[in-house]
Image 1 (cartoon, rainbow, N blue to C red):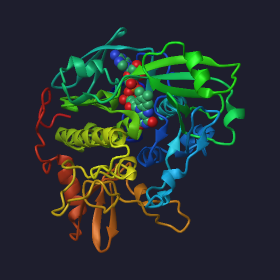
Image 2 (spheres, protein in one colour; image 1 turned 180 degrees about the vertical axis):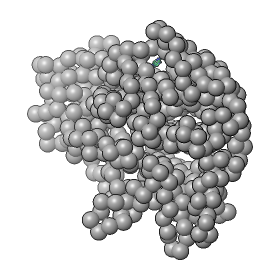
Image 3 (cartoon, rainbow, N blue to C red; image 1 turned 90 degrees about the vertical axis):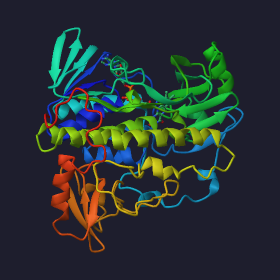
Image 4 (cartoon, rainbow, N blue to C red; image 1 turned 45 degrees about the horizontal axis):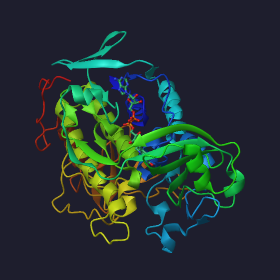
Length: 466
Ligand SMILES: Cc1cc2nc3c(=O)[nH]c(=O)nc-3n(C[C@H](O)[C@H](O)[C@H](O)COP(=O)(O)OP(=O)(O)OC[C@H]3O[C@@H](n4cnc5c(N)ncnc54)[C@H](O)[C@@H]3O)c2cc1C
C-alpha cells in the first residue's frame, strides 16, 4: 500500500493500515510536517480513533499545553478581553462524558503531526518525507506511483495529498459544492510572551476588534485570524493585543479562503481519496481534519480485508457510499455554523453529532434497518445499523467502552435481547434476533453482495481481483 501525503489524514491512514497488519509506504513531498497550527480541536470521534490506535494518552500528552483552554474570551483588545460563559451560560446536554470514552482535545496541528509521524514509523510504516509523487497510473492489477527516485508499485493507493490534490486532478475527479462561502482570510502565526497578559483567562479563541486570537500553546505561540489584505502584521498585532509586547515575532502568514468542495468520487479504481483531497470545508465547525481522520478509520479495515483476500474489492465502494454524503453533510453544517449566527436554524445539528460522527450512513457496508430514520439534528444515539455504536462503559472502573469491543476485528454485542454486529470501525453492521446472523452478515458484507450499487465505479479494477 502507498499513502500519498504526510498530513494528519495520510499519517492516520498509515497508522490504521499498520494496525490491520498491512505493509505501508507513506510518501510526503515536504521534508518536515506542517509548520502551520491550522487544526487545533480534535473531537470525540478523532480521540476514539486515537484510542483504538493506542495513542489517546500520547495525544493528550501532546495536548497538555492547551489543557483547560477550552474557553472563549472577547473584548476590544486582548488586554481588555474577558472570559465568556461556557456554551453561552446554558448547560450542554447530554453531559460530554456520556458521549464517548475520550473527551475532545485541543492540540495544534503542528504539534500533533510529528507525534503521529513518529507513531506511524514505530508501528512499522515506511515514512518518507521529502519524497514527491509526480504521477499515478492505475491499471487492472495495481497502481504505479511515479516519484523523482523511480516508480513504486502498489496494489492500492490512498491519496491524502491535500486540498489541491495532484492525484485527484490527474485522475480528472471533479468536485461539487458552493465553492467560496466567505471572504478570504489570513492566519498570522506569531510568537510573543503573552502569558503574563492572559494568565488569568486561558482561552481557546478570543475575539477582538478586527479579528480573533487562537492559543497555540497558551503562552508563547498564537494565531491571529483576520480578513485578508493587511500587511504590516506586527503593527496590526500590537494594536489587537493592546499592550506593550517587546518580543513579538511573526513566524508565518497563511492566506486561506473558506470554501466547500466535495469530490464527486472518493474512489477511482485502485486509488482512494481521503481528507482534504476528498473534501474541503470552512473551519467554523472545526471539522475538516476530524472528517479526514474518520475517512482513514473507515478505509483502513476495508483495505486490509481486501488485501488479505477476505473481502471482495467491491467492499471499497462502500467507502464512497458512506464517506461522500457524510463529508457533504459536515461541510454544509460547517457553513451553517457561521451563516446562521444569531438566526435560529432548524437544520443545524447538535455539535456532538459532528464531533462524535454519529451520523447515519445512508448506504454502505451494513444491513439497513427498516426504520432507520434518525434525526441528524439531535444527538440521540440509537445504535442502529450504519451509525457508530453508542458509547457506554462496560465496567464499573470505566476502562472499557462499547467502542472498544470492535477493532481490529469484528465483534458481536447483545443489546436488549438483540445481537448487534459491529464492524472493525465500531459502526453497527447489523442487528437482529437470529443467532447465526452476525457471522452470515459479516460474510455477506465482506463479499459486498449486500451493497446497494456495490459494483459502481470500478474503472481500472477487475472483479474479485484484490
Ligand atoms: C485556518 C484553518 C483552521 C483549521 N482548523 C481546523 C480545526 O480546528 N479542526 C479541524 O478538524 N480542521 C481544521 N482545519 C482543516 C485542517 O487543517 C485540514 O482539514 C487538514 O489539515 C487536512 O489534512 P490532510 O492530511 O487531508 O491534508 P494536508 O494537511 O493538506 O496534507 C496533505 C499533504 O500531502 C502532501 N502532498 C501534496 N502533494 C504531494 C505529492 N505530489 N507527493 C507527496 N506529498 C504530497 C502535502 O505536502 C501535505 O503535507 C483548518 C484549516 C484551516 C486552513
